[in-house]
Length: 159
Image 1 (tube, rainbow, N blue to C red):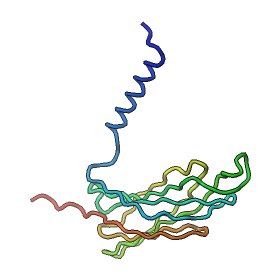
Image 2: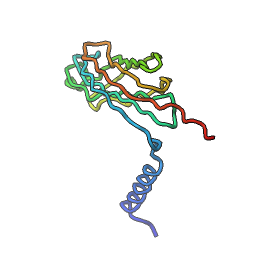
Image 3: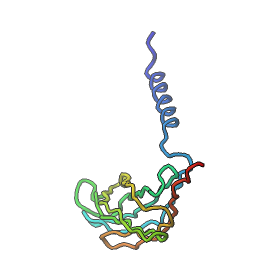
Image 4: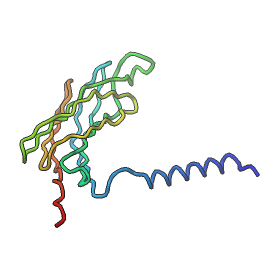
């Protein structure tokens, strides 16, 4: 007997939902710290957006953090089929400094955004354990953001 299309569709969607719940990626005890947004102009038309940034840390990655960047939907005027919602880009830098050890580094990426925002850009950083101070800037006119987060040290070996 053949199932109707709606029953088959429901079965596929239910299976996908269960798989998504079972396979979610963040390890237990992971901590996410979001920083203030960076309002910025962008290139590719007369447009602007806000850049969201955050850090993910976990005892599973001692001495490391994942820095994440994503742009909100663009607003402005530009060329193309959608003159009030162009596709724009802006170079974004998340500079960090470990205030405990003195280590420094940065994550730089070109964020491309449009009417739906951007994809998420992420990268592991070897910050070392301790307190990490962050400054988020762009290469266009913007208001920088500042934040901080803690990276766990490796667990002590069991005796």
